[in-house]
Image (cartoon, rainbow, N blue to C red; front, side, top):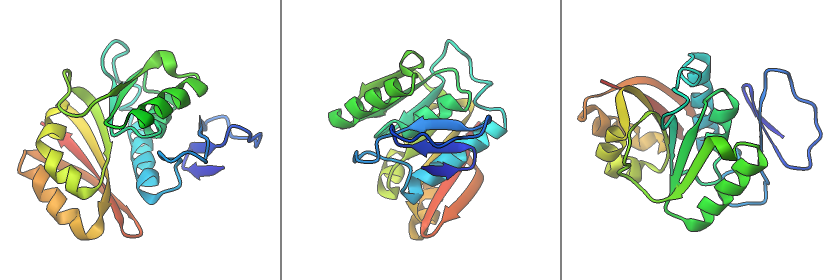
Length: 198
């Protein structure tokens, strides 16, 4: 079992007790698409919890896109956001195996009716008020215009997966698009950045 703040990641066979306020996400640790153990995933989960603590997840409309997870992998970030109070959300990935894994994991967590996982990439048809992208810095920089466009005016973007040595380059890519840096936190040699749009 792995704990990141109030988010608890545990395997399907775990019977370990959790607290009343914990957001529990069940993920098979044997899969290859993200189990919460890598620093970039932990940084993104910490950012999602910040959104929860700030009321941003519960403020999402129940009939809109909600939160968008770009490069969803196992669906762990989307599942955590939904467990923390987001009414609904979507995930996209270019790997069909990842899409299958995410769909399976969200169903296992009882979140299938509140989520939609699709094969694809940016751009998206409908922008979202909250967007999370746990991608390597090279992709963050390349996709910066599309990531910024995926966020509604007044919305927020969380980017993780960035080496500290490429952080300033990534910051420049987004600030040139009139995105405002609202937060930065690190673990080891990795960085996560939070942006506001408009």
